[in-house]
Image 1: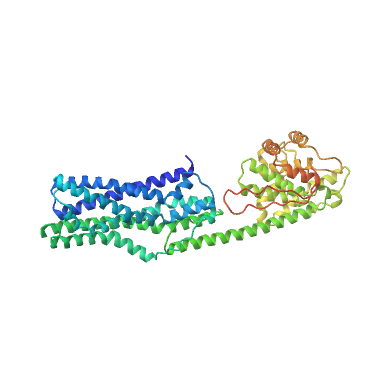
Image 2: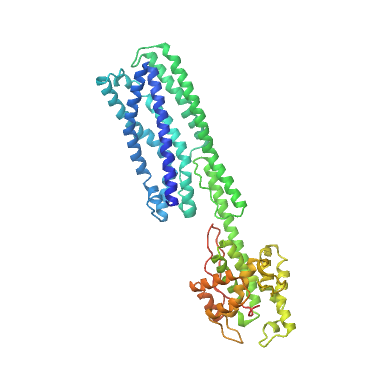
Length: 531
């Protein structure tokens, strides 16, 4: 079962159970109210209960038919798998209106169906089955039935508002802000609270007051003041029970958007992007959730602008450093791009892999402290010249550690020339003691050096470069991941750039959305082989 089907199945199951228990409570209330009003004997109560159950069958059928029609857009998305933004928007709109649709069904098809079924059954039972109360007497209580249905409608509204939230949240997480359908409906918070209090607190008392009045007037029965205490007692008992139940449901209705906003704030504090509140409210709390979503979007846009500025600054710096060596132009960007792809292949999260891309841009920043004549020397380097080249790792580390924002990149800058056998530099680390970022960068660095043209040799083919990598003391998992990427065709653009020394094609930061994968990188930037 897919996630969408499971969500809809849970929603449908809970809604059906809520409808069942609500209908049972209303049926029980009607049975007790009628029994006390007409002073039925015990066997008549059982008889009436059977008639009520029979009348409930067409009522449930009518309600189910209407509910399926109303939920058709939701079923298309969650059950039939219909994709597209328009279908999702239609489902979102239906779910947003679901609480009011549920209440409307109870006051419409539900109420009409039960009346249309119960009165004919009462007529047949009275004339042919010995039921003591005929439909004529029951007609006097006709104004009472909408009041009883209103109790059920109020409960359905509150339950529907709670159960639809999971589907709404899924649609928003899947399609983003574009799926949201703004509703013009606004119910002031005070009106909502007073409405629930009246519906679940005063309606039972209103029902009893109406029955007492009819009883004293002798509508459909003999005036019997001795029956009044029982009616009053039931009215107070049912009213108290409904007030408690209504208070619980209303508190959840109020707390849901507030809790959603608090949880979203915690996610933002933890550094998550794309945080939105999907809780629906038609009162001032709805303004709160929409205001939070607007604030979250503004923060993401500002974060994205800062990240792009940071990326552009680093790219400019790496290009300026690489420009000192025309033979390896594009090296830093390609190393960053290779490292990003390797990290993603190894299962890293997109944002972690992107940070490694930035480290790749900065890994040779220390070359700014190496004399240019050493970097551009074509012949063999002297031992002193080699030491100058090797010093670029420590120079880069000392430069980068001056900026707090560059702290995550320090291990890769300092240790991208360490080797698994401990024969690298500058700290002669070995094995797992080398940070994984540095191990991946080392593979990307050597691969780009081998597959790029140099004054003293032509670029090696990918097969030759892979064989050479296997001879080096590099992380075997990173080497294997790189080879698999080449077999999949993911490195062609970078290899082409390395051979032509084109300027960088650019690499964009992942926008602030959970699970977003950075675009396939281009390449560009200089460097020297194995440095």
